Image 1 (spheres, helix red, strand yellow):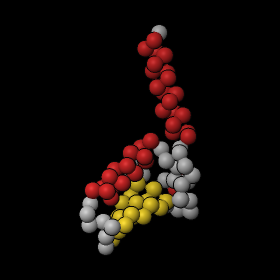
Image 2 (cartoon, helix red, strand yellow; image 1 turned 90 degrees about the horizontal axis):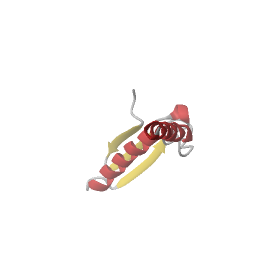
Image 3 (cartoon, one colour; image 1 turned 120 degrees about the vertical axis):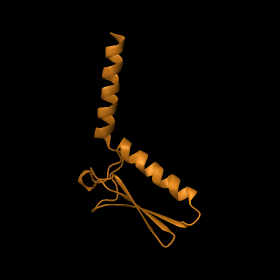
Image 4 (cartoon, helix red, strand yellow; image 1 turned 90 degrees about the vertical axis):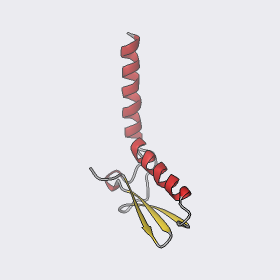
Length: 85
């Protein structure tokens, strides 16, 4: 499985690439976690002066991955109902 977010460093620049071109770089929950880690690294490093956020393929990002969010919420609701029964 490939990384959902790729990070490269070049002469004081951190390039963060959302790597879900098959989903138009929609931000799933896991993608959001990986982006957060990349941003934390950007914030923590004194040798990085510029951060560039881009998307793989033809689309920067189509926004939140609603299918992923729906699956996660549905699964939690089913677990909660099963526990309540």
